[in-house]
Length: 339
Ligand code: NAD
Ligand code: WQD
Image (cartoon, rainbow, N blue to C red):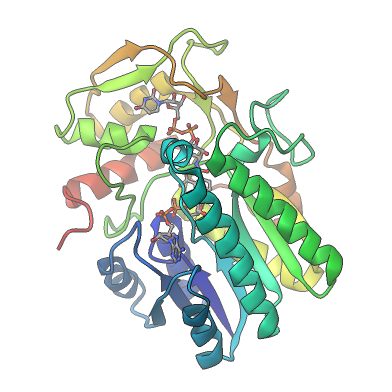
């Protein structure tokens, strides 16, 4: 039996591939490298000492997807990461986002159905909660007020998966709503490698720490939070990767469709992160306060009780390890995955 990991060359997919290989699973990875590089596949092998099949394929190219299932009849479940994820870009290119993420997922599900594979773990996001009425956020909170096309693709895919399950109860669906994944593999061999100037907080901070950017721009200090800066639930990518193992094992036994928040339950402000980075690395991050970034919300953090009680998963790493490992990745790979 083997697990297909779509988008397995990406940030979260690559860390998940390592955890599955370490746990003894056979995996097949597919990716079109639109936001990742082939060298990550060597890093996965280097860390685990294990081999796996890889397909350069595209969710939008049905024939390339069929070929994977045709040639690997042992695939019996899918962890579905492949998708575009840049919020700002999704506002500028909505058709590309809806097509890649929504049509791509429909193609994948059609393909799975044709080959009788009906178990899927899907990468959703806390963005489906929009601006939440209250924090910490429970899975029962209202879904559907995403503030951008990227977030809408997650809302739509959640709905599509639910309708597929309703139509055919043989499907087993686990929807994981990630909060803010950061950190890197402790080896320093894998991490987050965004193109250009990072949009997200931690990759921006690591570039400031490395002297590649002059200072952090803190987007607003007038939010209703303990120090006025935005509060988020940061989660170590290795903890997040391990949640997929637990989610797959659970849904395979329990069946049905279920939804889980994957976060630590702790909310840290931007300035808390600046301080934690200094505590973990000794590096002082220069910053300036700028106006709020459009579309941002004050606070977003999880109630992760359900994942703990139902999946038996909880985060093991704290903000110290997240900052330490992000910095370790940046300093060992100053130009990311370039050889
Ligand atoms: P990533 O961009 O590093 O990984 C996604 C991978 O999918 C990339 O390697 C990319 O090349 C591939 N891909 C994209 N479209 C494809 C297509 N049509 N066919 C084949 N491959 C394709 O992103 P990530 O941070 O690892 O995120 C993985 C998933 O988790 C995404 O679905 C993302 O929306 C979701 N997510 C991410 C975050 C986050 O902050 N990183 C938070 C919540 C949810
Ligand atoms: C975190 C905090 C910013 C950069 C995004 C997506 C979300 C999910 C995770 C995929 C906020 C502040 C940031 C900077 C700053 N992705 N900030 N200066 O916006 O919570 O979530 O990534 O599903 O959908 O929206 O993450 O890292 O961009 O921001 O002050 O240069 O850091 O204002 O308070 P966000 P982030």
